[in-house]
Length: 385
Ligand SMILES: Cc1cc2nc3c(=O)[nH]c(=O)nc-3n(C[C@H](O)[C@H](O)[C@H](O)COP(=O)(O)OP(=O)(O)OC[C@H]3O[C@@H](n4cnc5c(N)ncnc54)[C@H](O)[C@@H]3O)c2cc1C
Image 1 (spheres, rainbow, N blue to C red):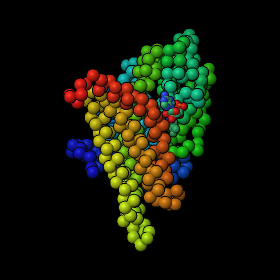
Image 2 (cartoon, rainbow, N blue to C red):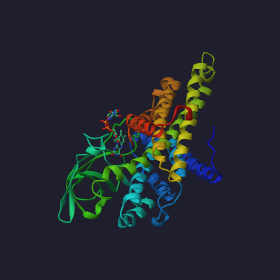
Image 3 (cartoon, rainbow, N blue to C red):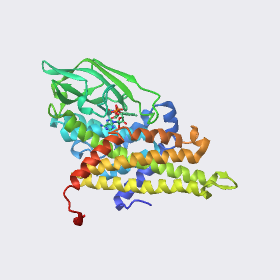
Image 4 (tube, protein in one colour):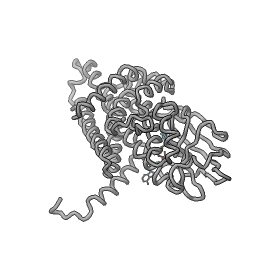
């Protein structure tokens, strides 16, 4: 089922799709094997305005709707989840600065991020801290007219190449967010390789040792680093991850429809076997459902409706778990070929698994969604439901 889009949205989607088909889809397996994203493709994303798609026009951004950012993430995710994750983390930092940065930070950073002249990464997780983000152990101490950072970050998507990191640290017990350039003395970056999925996303561990940063590196107020700044970034990240999963679902379905139409077993194409068709049924249905949840989240975001936060959690939770189911079934349908690197479904499986963990794992989404359900449906009389 094709999504119902306005003519402008359909036009945007068609141009994203053509770009992904021409420049991404056929090269994604190679990038995955090399565990690297060529700078040329990042430049191409930047040239097309995709790295600043929704940032304010006053700061060089495209000022586009969140819904079309979703369509972009969906199409890029169909071709390459690693590249989609570049759009995710770069947009997370851009949105956090647009929402919580000072006027000076917005003027300094947003034009650079919007044009892709600088790439941004999101540095929250640590070796000992993941889901419980408030308990980050990286320390920032006040020193003269600035701060000194000490600590470690881990699993930082595009950390190997990013020019600036949005770093979360405790300053005298108050969680804070800071913008830290990679070339500051005291910043050490170590590549992380061998991940199960999103392998081309040049992930890194980052160490801060006596790293001096100026006072104006602080984003938002002290104490609001995780509850407000990280929350805004993660909300944005969940949205593009959810759409990226719609792309993975679509890629799985396309691969399986093609494969089952050609591969013969027991004298007929695989698609004649009912048990195979059942897996196709689930994929097609869950693709439609995931896309509808993402479209709803996008519309609510564009309407600045507070319900967008819960809608985004639901979209991310459903789309990521559905993508993992679809990718597992896509490998199943491809048999031994699905287990080999000759077919992309193996890549989809690892990529989809990662989306159940990042930007708040499925369990963290379940907790958030249940909380929302208890508030939303509290006190509604039985006969009014
Ligand atoms: C490929 C990849 C890229 C990443 N990129 C980034 C990045 O760019 N920036 C960044 O900051 N981080 C990044 N991360 C880290 C990611 O955000 C964390 O992995 C995620 O937040 C989960 O944290 P954790 O891995 O420490 O798991 P933990 O928090 O240790 O959780 C382990 C398990 O326990 C479950 N669990 C935890 N708490 C609860 C609870 N209260 N109730 C029920 N179950 C619970 C979790 O759902 C999970 O299944 C990345 C991770 C991966 C794999």
